[in-house]
Image 1 (cartoon, rainbow, N blue to C red):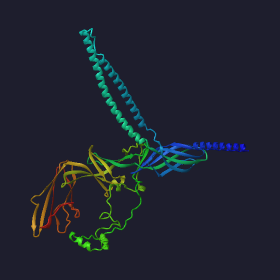
Image 2: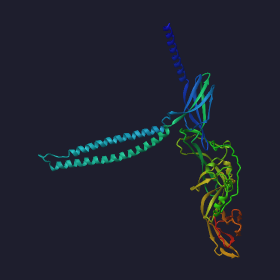
Image 3: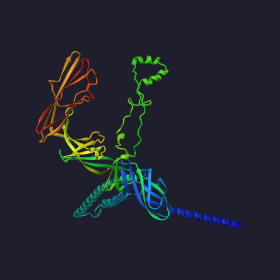
Image 4: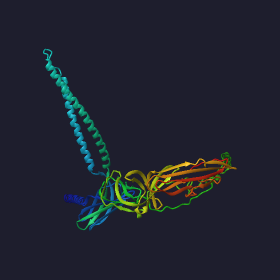
Length: 554
């Protein structure tokens, strides 16, 4: 009875283990590792959207597909998986695989081969060096000629001396040559080791994987597409502004510096540049109440007496009387809003209204964080040329290019390189946040337009008028056009602006100028004919109390 029972128990356990092996085997067969390729990338000002594609054979039933070798900078919240074919995607998961690092890239293998080559050369030179050193020792240890009983002839002695001299010289020169060769090889070996250490540091990192569970009624070859956002990527605009001469329109080359350090190289991928910025919030800010109160000042000698008489509750109230209260906060700047930095203004347009630039040619962007220059488009800009000068600060005239209708080219703020008449002039900053319909670009100094500014000494004087002082100032601005063509020029000057009602400013002469009473800016716009000389005059007076001093400042 017990024997039959034990037999049944043993048979049941065997059957259980056999079924377990079958299930394990089935589970292993239903799990597939997939290598996908980056095909398309949309690069935003900050971050990028990557599209990976792969064609996969999916057997009938339920299968788990493991898309491996993805960037660890992947934002799992943005992950989307789609497939073409008669199957159903059951679940999508993301994980970091710390046990499986990236495979050795071609660059690392090349460095390792170069490292081995130079190591072999060093070993070879060392062997030659050891042989020469041994030969030198042998010659020196056996340099005795003849014996005590039998001498040598002069002729034989001369022959032996010649042999020692010649051979030892050859050995020493060879050793010197080997020393230099070893120094060169070791230097190169050191560089290769350093570079290999950096490459391995970047390569030996964990990988990211996407686990996709699919179900198919019958075997099928399906095309899978993975879309996701990655950090550590972006682009910034850069421009080349080229003007053939002062009559030709400016040629604008719109370019982008694309960079990424996602851990995955983008090799021959279709690049799209977007002016959007998904890292920036799209929520509209709300204004909270902004309070202001009276500041009460107490002279120092009365403060202790005043505070000694004040009650505790009065002290609490005085806190609100002696400073500005900002939106219920206990600390902050006197006038409310926190100062902004350049980083607060990186976004030009909302991401939903972003402009996209599809690049027609595939590009390769390595994962090293270094900017890769990508051409976007070339534009011929409608240009108006004019000269401008501020003689008070600089007596040179500057050639300015006014770019008209610039806003229709979807430009962003960025650095621009300026070329004029085939020569690099310098760098400037193209401010796309300009609210005017023209962009002014300085093309450099034009030495052929001569400008001089000097004070009119006979006019500049100080007078006493009762209890006031009246001080007058006069300046002469002389201009000469030495060019063979006419020049349109704008001259900017200024008069001071009073910040005290006891100080009065009067403009006495500025013929033909436009004056801004708020800023005190005085502007002339005129045309200088070839070889023509013109003079402008600026005169003004300042009246202030006799016992006071005036100071000038911004």
